[in-house]
Image (cartoon, rainbow, N blue to C red; front, side, top):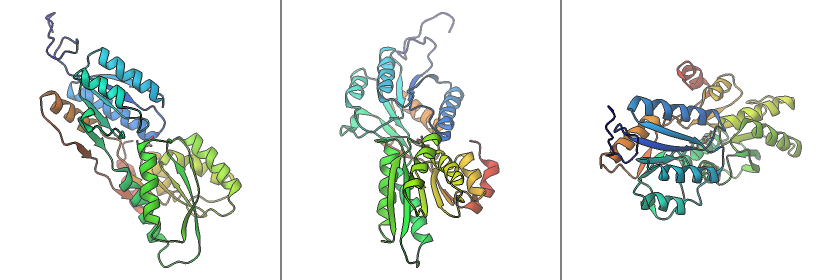
Length: 307
Ligand code: AHR
């Protein structure tokens, strides 16, 4: 302040504030909107100057944003990678510039883990396993084939890869449980609806829908109702996230089970940013705490749901 330049942060902001460059995936889902708000609110509360860039779902936009943060000499870069692969070059540029990078929400597949300080977010494989375990338990002791359709998240994104794997590995315990169709709905409501329409047209018997997020599940519910079927009854539905709209559908009986994925990563991210700036070394992997919800549990939790 007071016109005196303080270049100690190297950020050029001049007031000694930590400057954080954050590259967000986009605004594809209710989860993402809540995540963005959490990051913006907690930066403000922590007194951190946030440079926020929305990549609109495109990796090339994220790479451009990260390069621009490097040019601007921000203190720390954080980002939620849209897909897992293709980050080595730009992460190396950040490292060479001496700017620490924090992975938020989603992982990268870089072999060189020195390219980032830590990865803060959920265990998506565990989420897929929880979804699968619920289904295994539902059909325990029953006979006859169970026909499952799957709406995958964005192709190549960590949550799509891991939620598919955790689920498939777990339902393998019951040979009656079969995934008959699996396609991406890009984590959006609109594509969840469109893809579910094609599933309904091409597949005479669908017992279960597993959607990698609430939004795709909610889009699919519209398609199921339009086809004259009852979501949650004629077709059992499992989703991931537990945003307010998903929890509402769960409490109304249109979804049967939701595996929680918390978008509220902001406060933890700001703590890590401060830690990194003051020379500390956070854990290489920081896991988010999450639960699961049945229809009954959703009724209790819904009034407290902020997002
Ligand atoms: O990476 C987290 C996932 O991205 C959320 O589960 C999904 O809703 C979002 O788009």
